[in-house]
Length: 463
Image 1 (cartoon, rainbow, N blue to C red):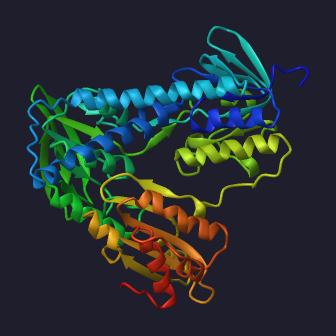
Image 2 (cartoon, helix red, strand yellow; image 1 turned 90 degrees about the vertical axis):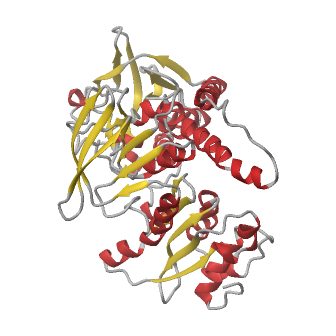
Image 3 (cartoon, rainbow, N blue to C red; image 1 turned 180 degrees about the horizontal axis):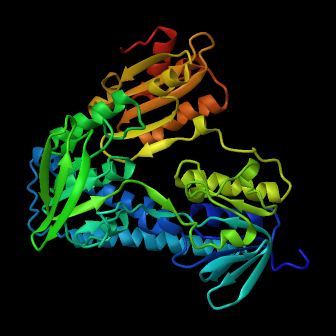
């Protein structure tokens, strides 16, 4: 567009930013992405990708007892966690280079620098260079939230980034926060023999998930020796050469002190909006988030915000979709005005895995929405027994009269993959009977999804 350097100028190359750049180029727009650090953002470099590499290797390590049952002797004396770390960095670096290739392939210019807004259509880099765009997209992501008194030093008090960068494991770790990140690190550390103490202020781990789901995960963790403290506050922290001491207050007011080599604090994220120069274009944040309307537009025409800087779930796949919506709107293509919050899948890569979308029983009750539920145990699907992972279930929440799917919750092996059959059904406005009568390959874990839907219809075969 004459008068501007780019049609679309994107600040941040995380999941939302790089996808927005590529999609803009596909739609014929001249696009550039500005990045101050590594291409791919938190998710790719110090989040989703390296953590899943660690989880994969942790599960391989956990399988060693199964090898012994087959008569194989496994000597773990030479085990060095540094090799696990190296593999996780290789995965992150490979994908970061892959994103750079995709940007180049699609002719999206990558600008290295730290950008601040200096006008409605302009950003200024630290070196003073000004870059203009007819449309601006803010995709600067988030960082670990700091709790006063528990500030990160990345030696004894770790953020999620610090935990991913460990090359040597402690003998004992306190994890403050039992959301998805805390639970995934609990899984990894416990798998490699670390004594984990998991502290959560709410009344259960994964407090936003279905209560029955979290009961299954809690039992699994406890069997593995994880010490879980729910309805518990962390009061204070003391550091010494020997490690850390954390004073906690449990439900009922009882106090005790936990001691460990290190502490991991994962109690949420803080938006990267505080040094963007938002005030220069008349934008203010609400609780740190940039307010947006339809198509992720801010109140300033031509400026959009996507991903972790807006008040939607802080998930990479949400940022992906918001980036697509914003640039499709800019290009004049039909795009949904906003994401349907009940159609956003959540996935937690612990063992057993947890996946969900839509309403929980508690949320439906809170909203006064009439619902019914049906569930089917994993052990009723033959494959779960064959692969020695019978723990878990598939649950569906539905409207009693129309049987419209309102939500689904899975805990068990490959839950993060299985959830999408149910989500597709909801998105396509299919009913439980459509899945119940569809032929599923045998033996597969997806048969548990089929049987859950047959339970809705009242004719489960393997229950």
